[in-house]
Length: 231
Image (cartoon, rainbow, N blue to C red; front, side, top):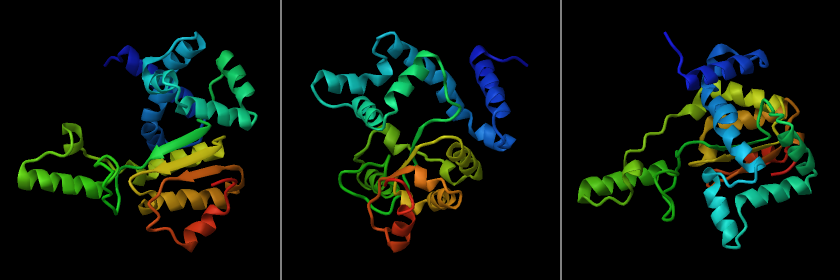
């Protein structure tokens, strides 16, 4: 039995993370994709930026900025400056201080949706994907690319391990949570997360964002949203 260098790195990250958390083993296994991004994929990008280079993974932002458009990178910098967090963020980066949890969570909860909007795709709407596949079967015309036509979405957002990991993040420093989909209001765990934030008195310090088609939005949802610092 041997570890490859990458697997050994990920294993050591898992050990380090487990020593600093009180979540169980199954949840730690579910956290592996997060750990790979947080400690492995993100670090080279961060170092390139600190060295004044332009990481290829950020090319969409660089392209917009070169065209005189405002990029997502610039929007986040402006937001952090407005909140008085930018100076601390830079100092922590220079000192190589990496938080155990992200400051913001932007979670795309699959493609489960109750609408098939004209401007949407199968990546963001299960109903649109069903229609695209039916058209291909009936007419032979492929309205989506090969990746879209063969898309399979695991319901990881329904797994209890996902909830446990999210609760850990909420209890240890997350400042902002964003849910997109699909239609997030169709995902039962979304309400559970919101109610958990309120029950643990974290909502008053959290920013909450949700991208919704509003067809399922009612007063019960609005009452929950009112508990957050900003929505």
